[in-house]
Image 1: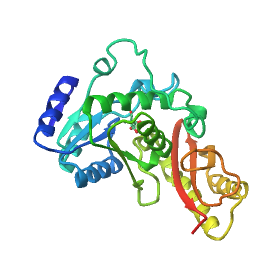
Image 2 (image 1 turned 30 degrees about the horizontal axis):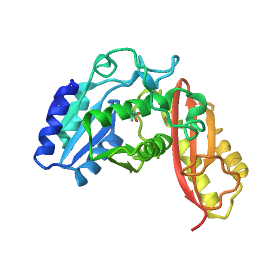
Image 3 (image 1 turned 90 degrees about the horizontal axis):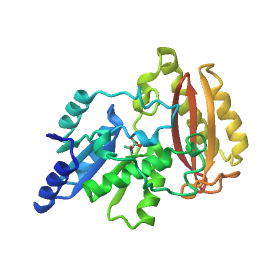
Length: 283
Ligand code: PAF
């Protein structure tokens, strides 16, 4: 498995793979890889013949007070994991390679970036959609793989690709969880032992929600109150939002009538975690 750091080298490698008739899969990451990322590589292997993993901690998606500087970086471990899982090449550009001059061109998806995480991270999705557009233009994959853990990100990217007629398919893969239910995330590394123990309450709250919906409860305010009680079992958890939204428009839902995305964001100390499930009142 090769690692390249320049746009010209990844373009050459992909051009060669395409000329050999290979289908190109891209797994965009910011490194600090875990089983969730590896599941994206595994999924890519089922449909693609040449798997590119990009590792780039994208500065433009972090707010001024966020964790850009301390975001976990462990390139050698990432390389070993990619190799073992069967990636063909890592594209690991520097900031200068991706943003050689001041960036004046941004890709912005409206409306669906304003709710949920967009409320507290106003520039975040603009950074994500811009860097993903750049990665798609550089790598020109046939398919690109994203995790359901970042549900809003996946919906925003799918919408951008549809609106802009980008010639690739977005594949969204299921959340991979620790044995106690905590969704895998590079940011879990920040948690202290106590916070880590309590972090599984996010998933427990979502499971509680699922149970209430399957028992016929449809009122999101009632469900939210019970979910807040679950999170309230730990003084380490400060909920940021528990939202019930339409899976496409991400508009808030008062009464669950069919499918809904139930999304949680909460702080454990300085670490912000997110998680979600989809519930279906129609079945
Ligand atoms: O989900 C992530 O790791 C990042 O937001 C992504 C998609 C790699 C863009 O920087």
